[in-house]
Image 1 (cartoon, each protein chain N blue to C red):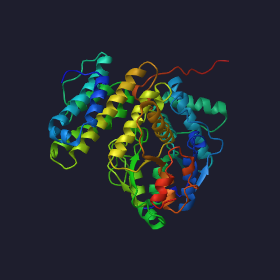
Image 2 (cartoon, rainbow over the protein chains, first blue to last red):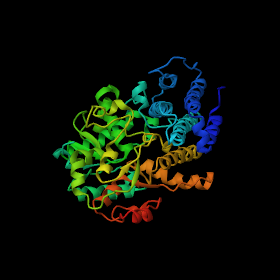
Image 3 (tube, chains in turn brown, red):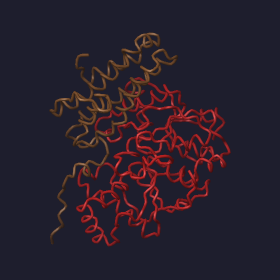
Image 4 (tube, helix red, strand yellow):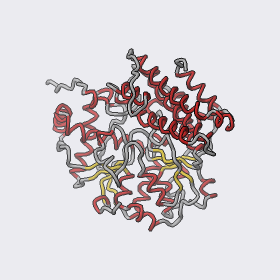
Amino acid sequence: MDRLTIDEIETRLDALAARPDDALARDAVRLADDLLAMGEAVLEAWLDARGEPPTEETHEGFRLLALHRQGARGNPSFNACRETCRELVYHRNLILAEPDAGDIARRIRLGAMVALHLALFIGGKLKEAGLGDFCCSSRPIRRGETIDTEPETA
Amino acid sequence: MAQDMKHKKVAYYPGCALEGSGHAYNRSTKAVGKALGLDLVELKNWNCCGAMEVKNVDPKIQTYLSARNLSITEQMGFDTVMAPCNGCYHNLKKAEYDLAHDAGSKEVNSRLSQKAGHKTYEAGQVETIHALDWIKRSIGEDGIRARVKNSLKGLKIANYYGCMYTRPRHIFPEKDQGPGSESTAKPHFMDDILAAAGAENVDFPLKTACCGGAHTLSDSDTSTKLVLNILTAAEACGADVVATECPTCHTGLEMHQIRAEKVLGRKTNIKILYFTQLLGMALGLSAKTVGVNENFSDARPLLREKGLG
């Protein structure tokens, strides 16, 4: 898949979720990997924006998880999408494990919603960059930031 | 999980949200406590935890704000404080961690406490728990089952925990400790409590996804899309209701559900209720007693249909 922008990924996921059940079922195996690839593209966009070459390594067998670890380095609020990445891997595996399951279209749509959450979350972070933290995790603790809290002088 | 006498009577830190937009959460938490025979003693003269804003000015001041509330807890003779709001809960836990691991935070806390004229809080004196811990530990699933008067049977629930209840993992050392403990990756305490009340929980993949709460003013469209996606996923899982345990998430889900229809033309029908409202009705309290009429998302027709409230 060519590198997609986050907006393109959102559009593509919306379109995927709107497809009829039988069309999703026919393409289940391909779509499972597409979902994972879209997740990777979202994280690549984040890393690109930070000027870091996206890793080609894998973590627990998945590049998506390695990209997440790379993106979270020095940016603990990024951990708010850790479980989203893991859910995306789970849904991809779930689809591939039983591509002929009776509710395969529903499984694909749920996978697409997980991928969409990742796209929206990272897209939001990119938009807000420079305006402060997107979420509320403990950035100062993890980064060991020092803030000037000198005692007042009389 | 065995019942735990330690948590039958705890200090209560409602926080600012529960006096405003989360009023129904405050009301239903107190009503559930009363129905379960649990005592909540509100902290005297508590202060705002600094929520998401103060840390961006000075994280050590934010730590102090929570340390002051922990100091009040201690001075009132309690060793446990319960905070139902994920933001307050997170900040109290973070302060506890900070004071145990960061000399600078400890120094600032000491200096500001002296200046404010109260005892300096030292790490390790008070345990912070969430409303979910409070009910799970003090009553447990068997205790809930024994007290259910109006089962939630037939109600399909997507349990939504939001992103602050479990993150960052290192400030919650009691979680991920094996059977009986809460999981940071797949939290389940709310699922356990509502299942004991008779509900059918659906397998919901976005239970710890961010609702975009911190974003809601600076980039409302992103928050609306995040919420719409969460609600759509809950509907796709077959849920009738999204159960919440955070006032910020709850308000965000309700407000952006309306905004999604207005701005994006995307209507979702799923209802949003605090878990304490659902549990309260299962315990025989009326919908009004637990503040269902205060919610924007009007669940009353659905609840009537299910024989609740």
